[in-house]
Every structure is written in C-alpha cells, then in structure tokens.
Length: 113
Image (cartoon, rainbow, N blue to C red):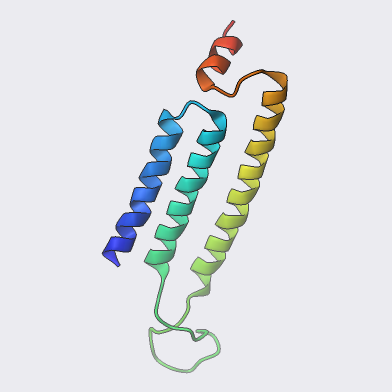
C-alpha cells in the first residue's frame, strides 16, 4: 500500500515538474493530465476499503463496505479533468492556427511586443 501511494505521489510530482519545465503547450497540457491522474489514484488509494457491500442496505456491523462518497468525488474529478483537457487542447489548436509556434518562450516574447 505504501509503495502504491509513493508511486501515485511520484506521478503527481512528475506532472508538476512537467508543467513547470516543459516549454511546449501540448506537453504542459499532457503534464497537467498526468498530475490529475496521480491525484485521482492517490485519493482512490486513501479512500479505498476492502468491502463490496452497500452501507445503506446492510444491517451488518462491519467496516467492510464500499463507501460511495469517494467514488462519486473521483467520478466527478475524472469528468471535470476530461472537460478541462478538451478545452485546453482546443484552445491550443486555435492558438497554433493563429500563431506559428506552441513554444511558451516564443509566445511570451510575441505577446510582450
């Protein structure tokens, strides 16, 4: 379990470093998606339990049930992340049609003129 949490946090760190150090807008969007996946995996690992029962429909006094709240939060995070990624990719595509480059430094120089 600790190894899986470490891998999830390493994925978050890898995505964060990609956002900081990559100069291409498409690679920055991809790094943001990698970071988002790492956060979702980490949250899923922290919220996971071993049960498969629904807590509302069972009379058992046990902690072995599937909690629906983290599942709903993760599903919402996946949908929001997908929509943000789609919006950013469309924006990058439109920007690449208007300007000849997707390099962040060149864009910054061009906009500051």
